Length: 195
Image (cartoon, rainbow, N blue to C red; front, side):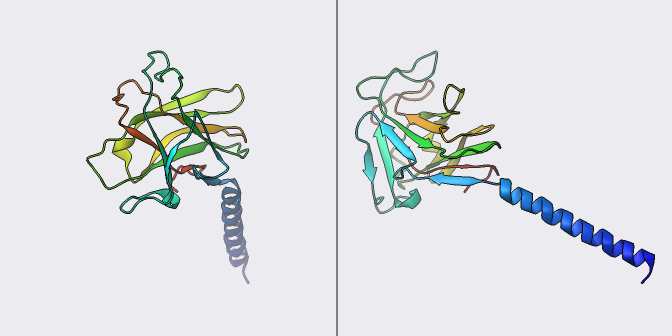
């Protein structure tokens, strides 16, 4: 065997092992979690939530179930979220893991197949946990039926990081108390893709 053949084979094998090493590192670092609103990773406060479990015929929901409440509150110009009150409700999806990479968060918005019913404009808040900062994203749930909508990202998460959705009115959207807002599955992942 010539020196050229040996060098070529060595080079090809080196490239193969280098690619396998890179793929294995990426696989270890890639992480994803989907949190159901009916799981232990979801917490709610402010009273009873309405729910469909299972979802009615004609609906599209993750895991065939969903929780919902109706809008309450007055927009606040400083925070864009209404002040708390006796009918104030919130639901939180908790990360439950420590990840030292950027995580991208998406919420699934269910569909009832009825285009005549208008759903609420809401504000999702990503909270890093502890006394860390939070990041807000406004979403018109009516425009995202039967879709995953990206609601933000965090540079890293801890077991106490979470996404929260309150039934408060949001500046720029209708504050009609007849508009429901929905709590369905939430996914976070490090690949920035829909689940």
